Image (tube, rainbow, N blue to C red; front, side, top):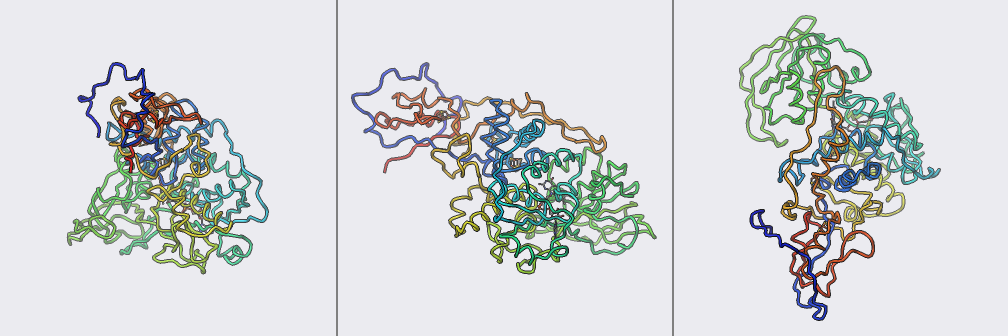
Length: 577
Ligand SMILES: Cc1cc2nc3c(=O)[nH]c(=O)nc-3n(C[C@H](O)[C@H](O)[C@H](O)COP(=O)(O)OP(=O)(O)OC[C@H]3O[C@@H](n4cnc5c(N)ncnc54)[C@H](O)[C@@H]3O)c2cc1C
Ligand code: SF4
Ligand code: SF4
Ligand code: SF4
């Protein structure tokens, strides 16, 4: 039970000056307090399995390098993730119930940039010659798997047909969201730890899957979704029509695709928004055409908001029927749509109304989604609907072939790809070490809602020892918010339409530290001492083993005051059986 602020009457002095030494009052109790390490909802949610609570605390104390090292246990790219991750962690932040969610991604970005500007390095063991693992695809999933396997001592070779590593992070996401020096800086660290990169090699063409199977002990496949899904309408043979990925790739290679003054982008996802914002930066008037409503758009709401701020128009509930024009595109014939019942995607279905209308444009960019190139998949694995059939640890029906990222059935985001690479790296290590059993693996390793794992906790390398770990989320109701002030979150500053200059400005150190102080550190003891101060029996003591506190059960009456006064839900009452 929690009291409201009005009900709370804090005693003038909560410290007991005497205790019932004679009575050993502990024998009276029917419940006892336990110190418990719950998981914060943000940690549960992060697909990369980052110890957010941990790095919030470290940054608040100015321990930036330790914060960087803590993230690097889970995710090799904090500066990238702080920029492009859709920060679903913030959707479950307990602080949102108090006032405003903590800007976790901005703190992560700061930590990542700190690592880059201070040229921080990680130590890895020497690669063992006979522990050879091949990774196919140097996107976030492949790079993450390579990084974790290399840290475990594996000899890792990465194959990718593109000239440089990064996958969609390099060739899809534009520089105003992810500057190339940030991408190069973080990927550069993977070269430093002796991962062998074989770029310009298409597996299945330049080298066979059978050859990889013979030469390597295990193969992790992360070839992503690079096939633009096409439209089936009339007039697609006219000039002035682009596919999203080819268009974005050209721009990311520093070229300037020849687009006209008036661009229509078809689609409602993130690639549609990227194509529109890039076209705007190339000087065009841009309209996004989407067949459902704004609430149904798969694009991230912040991306939609920024596109609007940059002057991009949205034509919703409209679907193209035909591209008009002669040799060149001159416009589109569209049909007005309405919304029907919710379909399999969980969104309301677009329904044709039969009412057609025209708009003028001289360029059309098709951005309705991407699919895996099925010819690129190894023949020895099974797939359905372009998705590789793999279990929850990424193992395919070929036991030495694992898969991750956009080719398996997980959300298509950089962070989910990074998480899947880590999960399969651990699975490959277990498989090659002869440890069997998926159930056992899941029981021990999976704890988050996104199927994520925290290696720092597993390996015990976290600076915050988890003495009594519990796989339960810390709810706002488990905490005592009385101890936290109400304060608005940090202001995120944006620079709009200055070419390809980064839109979101870097926060200052002061802003970031102040933001971390808004974090409740849900479920983790910060040694605030409240339990010690408030215990009327004087039975809470410093843990002689080091971090935190313990309760002396000889004198604890089980009143529960300590648990009630713990601000962050790091304690719980256990009833005696
Ligand atoms: C335009 C766009 C913008 C996006 N923006 C965001 C964003 O802001 N935030 C976010 O979280 N997600 C975003 N996404 C989604 C995200 O980029 C993907 O989910 C993620 O990149 C998937 O990672 P991956 O490693 O599976 O594949 P990819 O990043 O696609 O990488 C696959 C790699 O495999 C290589 N490859 C393919 N076939 C072969 C082969 N046969 N042999 C050798 N190499 C091969 C490719 O060259 C590529 O480098 C965006 C997607 C797009 C299309
Ligand atoms: S990777 Fe994404 S979900 Fe995880 S902490 Fe960073 S912003 Fe949040
Ligand atoms: S307050 Fe801090 S620990 Fe709690 S959910 Fe938010 S960011 Fe995570
Ligand atoms: S009251 Fe403070 S010291 Fe005691 S368990 Fe909670 S956070 Fe730790």
